[in-house]
Image (cartoon, rainbow, N blue to C red; front, side, top):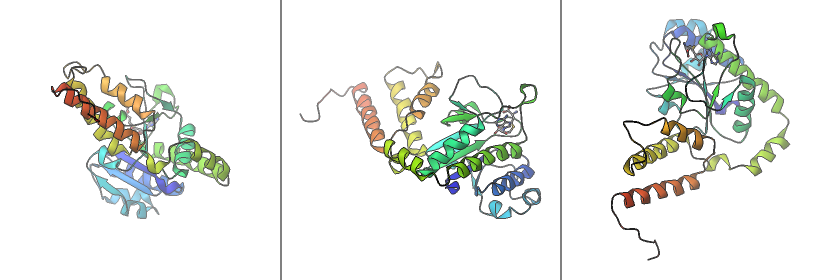
Length: 257
Ligand code: SAH
C-alpha cells in the first residue's frame, strides 16, 4: 500500500537534503522518490546523508518538470511553510497521512510534493495539488528543513497505515461508495483538460488572458475537489469541443439530425 505513495522533491539545491529525505522515507517504509530538476544529483553528499538508504537514491526517478513527476497520479498533496494568496483545501500532516493511506488502499497513486529550500513551491505548482499540507510549526519560525518536513509526512503516513492495517472492512466500504481508482482521471489527463478548458474560455471571451483574475486557479480548485472519472472527463472534453465549434461559427446541429 505504501508503495503507491511517491515523494516528489522539486528543485532541491542541496544534495544532502535529498539523502536525508531518502533516509526518512526508508525508515517509514516509503520507497518511491521522484526528483524534479535537482541542482546536483547524484552526489556524494546525498549518498552520505542517505546512510543505509542508498537503494532509494539508486531507484530515484529524475524528471524535468512537476507535471512529469505527477504522471499517473490520482491524488496530489503539496506541502507549504506559509499561506498563499488563493485559499486552498488545507490539511494538517495527520489528516494528510490518513487521506493518503485511504486512497492508496484503493489502488490510487498518491504524490507528496515538497518545494525548494529557499523558495518552496511556486503558486502555479501549488495549484496542481488537490490539497495543501502545512506542518503547524511556530509562525515566527515556520520553515522546517526539507528532509525534516519529509520525515513528518512520512511518519504520519506510516502511522495511518499501521492504524488501517487489519481494518479491511473500512477500506471495502469506501470502495463501494466511490469511483474506483482505475476509473479516475489521472493528473496528466486533468492537465490536458485544463489546457482545453482555458483555450475554450479564451475562445468564447470568458477569460481575458490580460486579466485572468485567478480564474484557472479557481477552476482547478473546483475540479480538484471532484474526483473526476475518465467517462466524466470524456463528457467535459466533448462539451468543450462542441463549445469551441460553436464559438468558431459552426452552426448548432443536433447529433441525430
Ligand atoms: N522559504 C520557503 C521554505 C521552503 S522549506 C517557503 O517559504 O516556502 C522547503 C520545503 O520544506 C517546503 O517547500 C515544504 O515542502 C517543506 N516545509 C518546510 N516547512 C514546512 C511546514 N511548516 N509545513 C509544510 N511543509 C514545510
